[in-house]
Every structure is written in C-alpha cells, then in structure tokens.
Image (cartoon, rainbow, N blue to C red; front, side, top):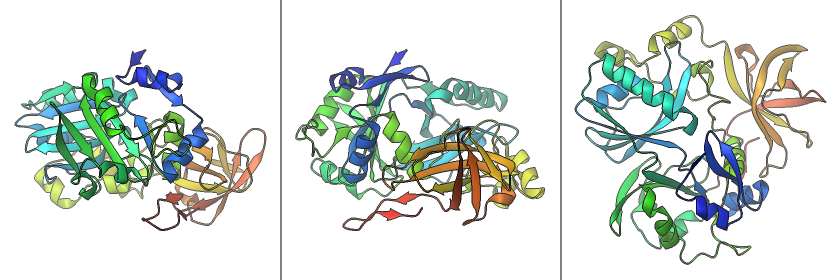
Length: 383
C-alpha cells in the first residue's frame, strides 16, 4: 500500500490504519464519535494526502478544463477554487473535483484517490483528441495535503497569519513558509469552517509541528486533535456532501446527485462551443423531463441505522436504495441519503428502508442535515 508523508504521525498517535483505495490511512484514533464531536466543537486535523493533485498548465489549460468540467473555468479568478463534476459521455460522474486557479493558464485539480489513475488517462485522452498544448503533471506523491476543520480553527490560524482568516470561502492564497510554498484554501469536507493546505511532501511534518507548536493534542480539551476517515465520513454526511462511490458514480446521472449548482449548460456556453464531455447526454435527459432518480435526505427516529445498499420502499414497492447512512453524532438520531425514483422526493413524505432485519420509517428532509452555527450561535439542526 502507498503511505502518505504523515504515516509516522498516525502511528505516533495510535491510529487504527486501514487500506483505503490502495493507501494505508487512519480510520480513527480515539474513536469516530469522539473525533466527530471534537471537529464540531473545536477542531480536528485530517491527513488527506491520498487525494490526487494534478497540475494542468499551458496555453490551452483553460480549454482543456472547460471540456472536462461541468462548471465554468474561464471566468475563475486567480486565487479561486471551484467545485465541479467530471462526466462521462453518458452523463454519469467520473469524479467530483476541486479546481484551483493559480494564474491565467496554471491550475491545480484535486481529485478523489480512487479515481486518480482513470482521470489522468481521461485528461490525456481529451488533450490528445483536441490537440491541446497542455502539460498534465501528477503531483500527488510529491506533495501532501492536510485539512484542519472546526469552529476554533481560525483562532489557531490567526496566531500565525492575518491573511488566511480573511479569505472568503472557496478562495486560497499561496504562502511562503520557510523555504517552501504552501497553498492554503478556505475549503473543507466537514460542514465546518477551516482550511486545507497543500505543500511539499518532505516538509509537511515540519509544517504541522510549526502550526501545532502550542497545541498539546494529547489533552482532553485540546484545541486541535487528529481525526480519521471515519469521522470525516460522518461529518460530510451530516453536511449533506456527496461521496464518490455512494452518491456519485459512473452509472449515476450527474443531475441526480443533488449538486446541480456545479453543472452549467446555459445558451451562452453552447453558442461558444465550450461543451463539456457528457453535456449532450445531460441536455437530452433534461429535454425528456429530467433524471429518473434523485438523491434525498432521510431522517429517522430511534437508534437503528440504515446502511448503504439497503432497499428503499414506497407503499411496499422498491423505489431506490440508501447510498450513505449513520447514527448522527451531532443530532443523536439516524440519517441517510438515498437515490430514489424522482416522483418520490417530496419533502415531508415518508419512505421505508428495509435493512434486512427491520423496516425503518424515514422522513424526507432538506439537506444539509446540519449547518454549522455562526460564531456565538447555537448549532442548527435542519433534520
């Protein structure tokens, strides 16, 4: 298995390591629930170096990314991040990505670990087919990526930078830390405030020590503690964020995933000829009345929890399946996302989930299930 540059750090903090898409990654340290609540109440640090980081640079970089991404790229500003999908020709989702614009023709694309190889091949195929002058460089193993998330994270960040806390969401800055450049973005995958930092692989341990030099992560009430993939999953589910292989996939229509904001197909773009891969298929689906299925949020009473793959029923008839589910540590009851027939998506209606052992009644609710409170406000439970 591949190891991230922070592998030794994980072992020092007694992480339970697992194989995650070919990477040896920490599932948890003290426990998923504890780490989840630490992030919601204060702050947690995640190693996300397994995520792919691909540099796209050159005269036709924008043109290539306009072809690959479902969202506009040309109108991005330097220092801006943009969430997008990458589709296949049928309108299914190859991956969801985060695009960073460093300069006019200089971009960084962050992709899911499980999709890095296939996306690199896809990027190259589109580049070659359109004869574009672009350099595509996989920087995953030469760099590291760390996420620090939680309501008190900016308190820590402000102790060594005044610029970063002033960044707007989905903006980034490039900082010089000693002899290295660090990309710091106001992004994350937990529903909390925080940052994600990309830096050279050989420097990440030193940088982490500098950032956390005044934090004793072994204390019960520590400002920041390490958190693993388990807590990252429950946090993103509460925040209603899709996960590839669950709410997103090659066989799932991009219009079904609940991220319509990341798909732009207006007339102006069509006239300019900047059509992304899969756009023809999605336009046909819209013309035919829309996708057959959509992602919904389900809220349950009690403690029995639906899991991915469980059948969803309406009036005794199968209409879909659960894509993700957990007992929400923040809300105290089970929540789930499910891909169901589009005619069964009305907020407030009831659907049944068959777990194989029991049938659970769930109410369709708006997502996200949880919204992080503003400073000095109470948490907002939407489900």
